[in-house]
Every structure is written in C-alpha cells, then in structure tokens.
Length: 339
Image 1 (tube, rainbow, N blue to C red):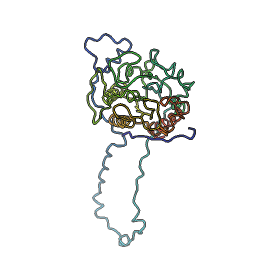
Image 2: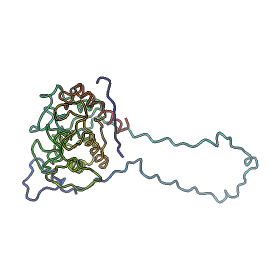
Image 3: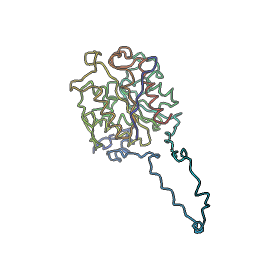
Image 4: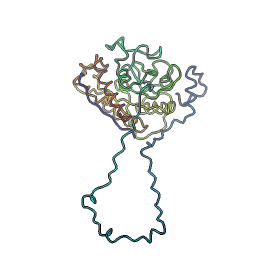
C-alpha cells in the first residue's frame, strides 16, 4: 500500500449521480455520463504484485531406485563445519520496481497556490503570476516537479479562492474541488487522460472554518451541497478514481498559514478550533483509504516561524517557497516509483 512520504527543507530555502431532469452538460456530458455509470462507493484496494502470495514449490519426486542407494560410510562421517551450519540462506528484500516518469502526463487539482495564467480553463480564477512573485510556470511548485522528473503538463484544473466543499453539481469556474466540473477539467484539452493527478486543496476550507468531520472508513457520498470537509474530500477522490482509474493520485498536505488577522507567530486555529494539522490528518487518512500517496508539504520545512521568508502574504509561496515545495514533491514522487 502507499505510504506517507516526507521530505526536508532544501538548502536554499460529476456529478457521479446526475440529477433527474438536469439539462445537458455540454462539453462535460460525456464525462458525467461515464461517471454516472459508476457507483459512488469505496474504492477497492489494489494488492501490489509483490504482495501476491507465492506459490508453494512443487514436491520433488524420488525415483524408486533411489531408495536402494547406499550411503557410503565415509559420507556419514563427514562433518559440516560449524560456521557453515550457522549460515542462513537470507533472501534479500525485493527493491521497489523503478518506473520511468519521462513523458508522463500530469494534471493538478488545486486552489490559488497552484494557479498560473495560460495553464487553466479560461473562466477559472487566477492568482499567479498577477498577484505573486512567480513569473514563469516553470517556477511554480508543480512546474519544478515536471522539470525534475521529465513529466509533462496535461491540464491545470486549479482555481483561486475555491474550496473542496460546496455544490458538487456546480459547473462554473469557481466550482469546488468535489464538483464534476473541476474533475472533468483534469482531462487534457485534446481529451487525453492524465497519468498522474496532484491534489493540493483544503486551505480555504480551513480558513472559512468549514466543518472538518472525522473520516473512519470509505462510504457512499451524496451529490449536492457537501459542506463537511471529509465528506467532500472523499467524494472528490471517488470521482477521480471513477473517471481516471489508471492514474496515480497524490494528495498534498496543507502548508501552515497565517491566522485570520495575518499573524504568523503560532499555528493558525480557525473558528471551530481546528488547526491545519487537524485537516492534514483527515487528508492523509482519506488518501490512505483510497490508495493515494501523500506528498507531505506540512513537514517540508516551511512553518509558522518562517512564513514571512517563504510566502508573500503568509499563505502564497514566493518563488523560493515554491522551490521548497517543488523539491518536496519531487522527492515524494520519485520515492513512490522506486527512484
């Protein structure tokens, strides 16, 4: 199974169930129809090939005349050296298979931190580069991941000021992460499916004090206004796995951020008393239940003590901060494929 992957600070510092009587969904109708055919239910865990039970070796057949063979007396007297008898036929642990990432297509589902003009649908909300200090897409955290791994961009479905929670049937550029619109937009403009999907959302849900919830086990989620974070995050993953069953999914934990007043001297706490760490615990639990890997941005080295160095406003990374995230994502992805 996939495991939590952590890294350190570098040196530089669908509606799956469409409502009866809904109008056609235009460009997204095919995706919505495909997802409607898939029951929104817990994803089946995939058993890795190396975890398959090894077949027991076939029993050796002893020839009949072998029973009549006489063991020479001197053979019976042979003594096995003590050090040889003590040796154990140790079987080395199998190393994870190395998978080439060259040319793999990557799509991103995110909020303002992952936006960049020219890489997103036209009606999406933008933050970078207009409101940040990252002038080139290659300097975003995901742009650096692509450069470091040889992967290529399929589609950036990131829209600023958006939550995971919200109306899962919304079709506009501000639709939440759990919506069919956002998930359908992970397809390339040529209709191709991504090989890798990166999800980096949730900090706006934290800031808006959405009800966190407590994920315990996979369950069926209902379309509509999904306002509990754990329910919306699970619905989002269920839809992604239904529409892109072959894609490798990575869920990013959230960076610490400033509090509602812009202060960065301590971990932020929202109006419900939840911390960013509380949200990350739920993200990690849901990811594990659905076979997704975790890129642990929360422990990359950027925290409330140095947000002024690595962000422009206590929330959005500078180009230096994006470099830290890019390196963290690179190490996590490469480790997950045995590189």
